[in-house]
Every structure is written in C-alpha cells, then in structure tokens.
Image (tube, rainbow, N blue to C red; front, side, top):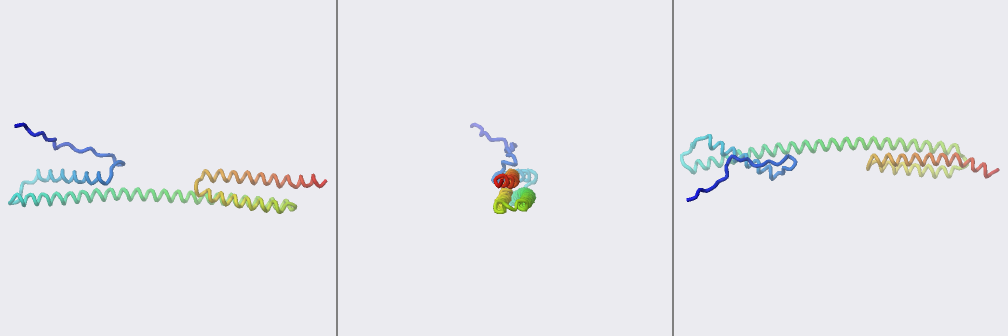
Length: 187
C-alpha cells in the first residue's frame, strides 16, 4: 500500500504587513497562535486523566481558554493602536483649526486697514463723498468675502488679499485723480 503524503507541520503562515492586516487576519493569527500553544502544551504535559474522554475534554478546555486570552490580548493591542491614531488625528485637526483662526485674524486686520484707508480717502475728497462711500462698501464686502475664503484655504486667502489691495490702490489713484479732473473741467 502507498504512503499518504502529509504537509510538514513546522511551517509558519505568511504574515501580511501591518497596513494590510485586517481584523479577519488578526482572528486567524490568534487562532494559529492558540493552536501552536495547544500543541506545545500537549507535548510538554504527560496525560494526567484517567480516561481518554477526560483527557480530550481537559485539552479542549485549556486550548479554548488560551485562544480566548490570546485573542483578547491581540484585540486590546489593536484597540490601543487605533485609539492612538485617532488621538493623533484629533491633535492635527486642532492645530489646523488654530492656524485657520490665525489666518482669519490676519485677514480681519487687513480688512480693517482697508477700511481705515477708505475713510482717509473720504475725508480728503469732500466733493466726491457719494463715490467714496460706494467704494468703501465695495471694499468692506470684498474683505468679508476674503474672510469666508480664508476658511477654505490659505492660498486662496492670500490671493484675495492681494486683489483687495490692488483695488484699494486703484481707488486711491481714482480719488486722487478725480479732483484734478474736476478742476480741469471747471476752468
């Protein structure tokens, strides 16, 4: 009669990387560890029971207890890792929120500077009060839109602030040039 071929029992299964490991894989790993421990315990201990049924019952009970403890330890370890990752993500979000608040404050200060510049232009040009008032309202609205845009990205905020500064300079040039043009037309 031919011999039956068997796989060698000393081989260990391949282990996936930590990033690819899933809960299913962890359960398999715990089961394999429990099986190995049961095999080792069985090899070390001589039979202590009176009957084969009692021996089998004791072995199954012991192996099950070890498997439960091993799986519990693995789950606890993975839970700690997940909690650490969640805590790190929360800290990063807090830092990002603080940076966003600082950027918003900077934009508000820029808007305030724009308002002050607009006010100075209004005082210097008494004959064009209506034009300057509408310019100030436009500047304030532009600054408010700039504040909203700052919440989305810092780059968009910087571009909007530059745009607002260019508009203010154009308005100042307009206001400075307007009295000269009015004088030319009046002569």
